[in-house]
Length: 394
Image (cartoon, rainbow, N blue to C red; front, side, top):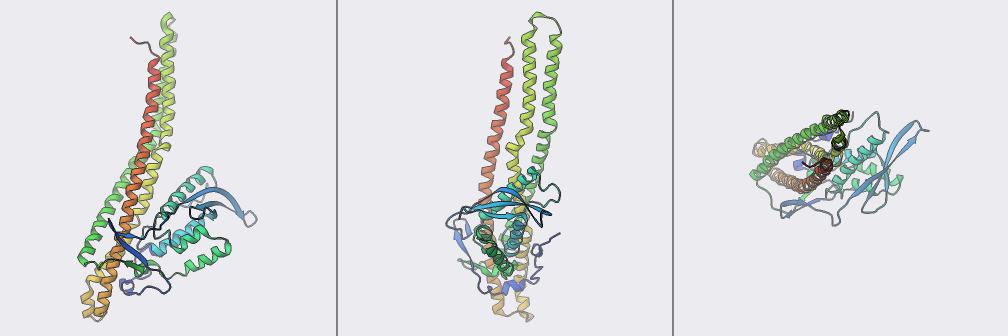
C-alpha cells in the first residue's frame, strides 16, 4: 500500500520554522498571486487548457505475462495524443500531491482494482473518472502550467518522458517549501486577519463536506430504490392489470373487449414505465453523484492544507517568545510574519478558485439533472395519457 508522506502535515519538514524562514530554492519560478475582483487569485493562463481521455486499449509486456490498459490523452494545446497507463496517472498524482498538496487541493485518483480490471464496464467507468480528474487538474491555473503536468500531456518520446520524470522526482520545491515561491502583489496581511480567514475557510469546508456527504447518501439510496424496489412495484401493477383483464375476458359478456384491451394496454405501459424508472438514474442522477464524489475528494484535501496554515499561525504567535529565548532573531520573526502573509494569500487564492469552480459545476450539474428529471416525468406522463385514451369516456 503506497502512502504519500506529504499527506501528513510536516512529515518532511516537521518544524514550521523551516518553511517560514526558508528562501526560495534556486532555479525555481515564483508563483504570482494577483488581486482580482473577489480578492487574491492565481495567475490564469491566457488560453484555457483541457484534455480528453479516450480510446482504451489492452496491451501486454513480458511476452504476454503482464497485461494492462493504455489510454490516449489528447490536450487541447497540441491536439496530439499521448499514451498513458493507470500507473502513469498514479505517478502524476503522487508528484502533484508532493509538490502542491500543502497549498492546493489535489484530489485522489479513482481507486485501484485487483480483479475485473479488464471488464468493459470497469474500463469505461475508470476512463470517465480519469477524464474528470484530468479536467479538474487542467482547470487549475498553477497545476496546468507546472512542468510535471506539461510533461505528462506533451512528451514527444520515451526518452523525453523518462528524463522529465527524473527531473520531477528531483524537485526540491515540494511540500511546505512551496510557500517560499508564493509572490503576492499585495501588502502584508495583519496576523488577526490571517487567523480570521483560516477560521472562515475551516468552517465552510467542514460544512460543505457534511452537505456533500449527505447528498451522496440520499442519492445512492434513491439510486438503489429506482433500480430495485420501485421498478418491481410498477411491474407488479402492470401484471395485476393484465391479470384482471384476463379474468374479465373469461366472463363471456359481449361488450367486454374494449375494457379488457384497455386494461391490457395499461398493464403493458406500466411495465414499460418500470424499465424507464430503472434506467433513469444513469441518465441524470449519475452526473449529480459523480460531481459530488469529485467534491468529496477535493474537500478531503482541505483539513491537511488547513493544518499546515494553523501550525504556521501558532508558530508566528510564539514569535516574541522565540526571540526572547534566542531561537530566532528579530529579523527572522519579521520574515516569518511575511511568509505567513504569503501563505494566507495562497490559501485565499485557492479558496477563490475553489468557489468559482463550485458555482460553475453545481449550476451545470443541477441544470443537467433537472432537465433529465423533466424529460423523465414527461415521458411517463405521455405513456400514461396513451393508456388513459384507451378507456371509454363515461
